[in-house]
Image (cartoon, rainbow, N blue to C red; front, side, top):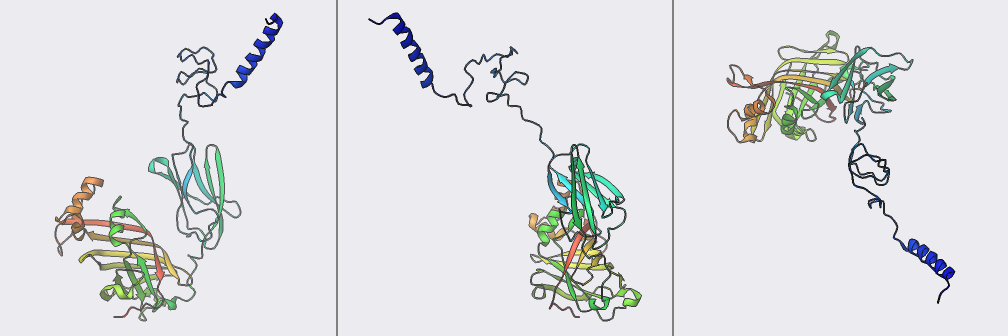
Length: 359
């Protein structure tokens, strides 16, 4: 028979052993003294799934999702970019609209560049449009601020905007404008449709020896190509003199062609024609390309109908139903309300060595 003192000691040992053998508490398990009530009773392990209880980790299961923090998704110019186009806007895109956000540019002396700030996409995109173009080949800083963040990002402009070294060297050089590139701003929402149709199609331009650079007048040949990567083999409809009625204006380093009567593209056997076309852009000082290009034209949508089932007017119907665009009268040459006015910005052209245009 055990002595009472021995029993007491045995009980203590068993108690310790029992505690020691107890499985460890997993943070995913409910607390042992959870009362599962909705009454705020100062119990720090209360998991009643309300938003006003006293939960502490690891048993806080209120399922309250914190509001997302503003974060930058995309930005232009990029940090340390050294070839920002001098005539472009600066912009920043956020995941959500930030509070108290601003965008500005300062020069190397710390002087703020005058300009106008605007908001797009419900405040998620902030755009800064300098009053005057930035200086070519110059260092700047982009200031991005929102509550409570402040960022300073260095960047530099490219040499674009510097006068062309030898304007006469334009003669004989062929440049290809990628028609599926750029930003199609008018009509809103139409850009992706047209870009998907044009894809690698290009418009080729070349100055002729008849140009008079002293008078700022340039004679320009033009041709359409189905593939900018293989332009000479895919030229459609031959080469034409775009400036027969009116020479292009060359104001070093800018060029402007207007109006070009028609630019046709053959897509899947159908001719997609741009009419009353105005083209402008800025040459690089070494004539290695063109940036800041713009295009304004009238587009007959009927050739696009085939890709939408073939019924005449299908494209206009789609535009009306999806984005509220009403097609316009095309005119005497091809009557009917099937035309839209288009505007493209930020187009670029690439110098195509070895490609020659001739009548």
